[in-house]
Length: 517
Image (tube, rainbow, N blue to C red; front, top):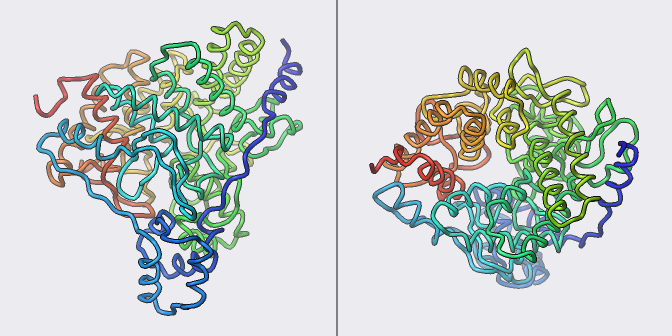
C-alpha cells in the first residue's frame, strides 16, 4: 500500500469526538486562585489546586468577595476554613524490600467520586498514587509503579489501574498528565502500550477493550495529522522534510499552569517573549515528564529560553513506534488485516524517519531534533536509550549507544539524566527511577547484561543508602554523590511510586543485589 493511500486511512482512524473538559481551579476560583498563587500562601503551588472544597465553588467565591482578606495571613486562614488541604506521611520499615511492601497499601486509593468544586477527576476503580504532593494517579509514573506491583504479585491492581485509564480515555479522549481538571489539556509519555502488555488478558473481551483504548490513545497523539501539508506542525504532530510524520510534546492551553501559576508568570516575565508562547513551552515540558531539563532549553542556565514544542523527541517517537507495532499485532490477532496493515506501515515509516533524522552515527547516540532550526539538539540524555527499550535500534546502534552511555552517563550511583548541571531537576547529577529501568531493560534486550547490571547495582546502592539515612523512598537521587536529589520547582518528595516500582523490579530481576542478602 502506498503512502498516499495510508494517510487518508489514518485520517479516517483519527476522527473522534471528545467530551468537553470540566473547568480547572484557575477557571473555577478566578480571583481567589490568583491571590493564593501570587501571594504564595503555600510554598508549593500544587497544594491549593489539590485542596478539597468544603462548599460549592460559587459559595466560596461569594464568601471571598464578601470577606476580602487582604493580608497573607488572612488569606491563608480563609483558604483553610473553606478547603481541606491535603497531606500524608509514609510508614517506616527496617529493610528496603519491607518498606516497599508496606508502601503499596499506603499509596493505594479506592475508587473516587469527588465532590463538586474539587479538581480531582472521578475514577471507577482502585489505583496507586506516587506519594508526597502527588495525590492523584499519574500517567507515565503508573507504568513504572506497575513493574513493582507485578513483581510483588499485585496483578489485580494493575488491571484496576488500566480500568481507570480506559475510563479516562472514554470520557476525555486521552489519558491526562494526572487525574486533575487542570491536567486535562496535556498528557504524558504514552506508556499505555507497555502497561497493557503487563496486564493479565484472560479473555477476548479484555483484549478487545485494550485494543480500543490503544487506538483511541493513538488518535489523540496524531490528531490534526490529516490537515498538515508538506511541512509544518499541528498539536502533537510534525511533518518532516521527507513528508513523514513524527511527534512532539504539546499542551492545548497557553496560559500559566494552575499548579505552578506564580512560577510560570515569573518565567514569562523574564523571557521578553510573548507570554502565551512561554506558557505553551512550559506546559509541553510538563507533558514530556521532564519538567524541566536542558533538553528543552536554548540556554541551559535560563528556563525562560524554553522551546519544547520546537523539538521532536527521541523518547516520545520510540514510544509511538511501539504503540503502532502493538496495535498492528493486536489487529492481526483479531483478523482485522486492514488495521494491521495500516499500523504496520505507519510503524515502518516512523522507524525510517527516526533513523534518518534522530540518529547521529558519528556521536553514537539517538538525539532530539529541533525541527524549527532543522538540526539535532546538542544535549546527550538518557532518552537516547528509548530505542533500545522498545527494540527499535539495530545491533550496531545498540553497541554504539552502550559505549556512549558507559563513557558519559553512567555514574557511581546509577544513570545520570544528562551531562548538564543546569540546576533543573531533569539534569545532572540527578538520576530518576524510570530512566534507570529504560536503560537496564533496553541494554538487557541487546545483550548488554554487564552494563545493565552495573547501572542497576549503582541505583540500588543509592536508594538503599538514602533509605537508611532518611527512612524514605524518594522521587529522585543524586547518582554522583549517592544521596537525595535536588533542583526543580518543588521540594524533594517521598513516597514514592516509581522508585518503589523500579527498585522492586530490579531486585526481582537481580536478586543478588538485594541489600538484605
